[in-house]
Image: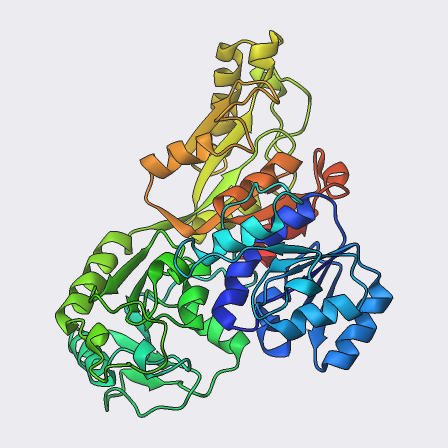
Length: 479
């Protein structure tokens, strides 16, 4: 039994999700202890045994005692959180030796200097050597896989941490005015109620009015998101929303967005990062980032991402066609029920349809590579006759446990597709009936859908996917 104390800050809580799959992949029973306000980040994650909402220290200690946890990881730096684990009888208490709590920890790790490592790497170092570190991405925040509203820009005008961390409101206003004049809709968000950026019907002021779950929902629909180093910045990063991240008094090396569609802007003055709430010198030079830089970066992001499409990486045998072992004769290919309806639905939603299939029969000497190619062509023909065009088919001939870079769950086939197609990395889905399909989804930061055909029934006993469907056409209930 493992218990994990989730960070209290929203952004840190989002980043902590990056290690959950690593913990659950080892078939551990995992319980999460967290504050109520960060719960929406975790509520849809499968494989977590229980989520406990921290209220009072005395109640937390009582629950932890009943849990009888073998090991506890503390992602919070506070003395009080270590005290809870100590008095709660957690046998192995692992955390960084901060806030005078070394004696409360059974494995007190030396803390890193701020910015020495990204905070996600700090979390990963904490769980080593207890858990194998296989999955590099924060978990995609489940339930928010939506098509961005083109022409909609989100702006979070401030952090509650302090004045030094906030870019000037008037500069945000100028950015908003520019995009409103260009015909864009602007959605203004933030935890604290602030005045409207621009007096225009094209600006919707939601600052101080959204609960966390609603905030995630809003951010998931944006074409571009602009903010400082805030919790909302990390939400946008986890959702892979194209974003401009403005850093003033803090360090992107420590808490920057882990998002392939992010641009980080900073002033670079010698006194930054200071991590202060207020400028010690009173001049706030770190906030002097030109408005023109933000606008130019946003325009570049829009140009580079507006034609990106979601993708469904599809397993072949047992997912699209009936599982019949190593198929050598193309005439043996038989589509599974619901395939046509499901693929047509995904095509209508503008998904690229790309098959990735392990075909180790080639290296085993059971099938020839020419046989695999012919079977793939037969599959394409059957689907084409039903009005469905596959965008690509990739196969790996390599054996299991061979160190292959292409055989699933390795990402080689996906990497090839990323180089060939305009894929939105924030909207990647892997559909399959085997463990390696779900693990591939985790490795690429996508959503894993287990279809209970083929080997699906056996696979669901081994690994927890993001979604399970009885037949392929049930995918219409997810996206």
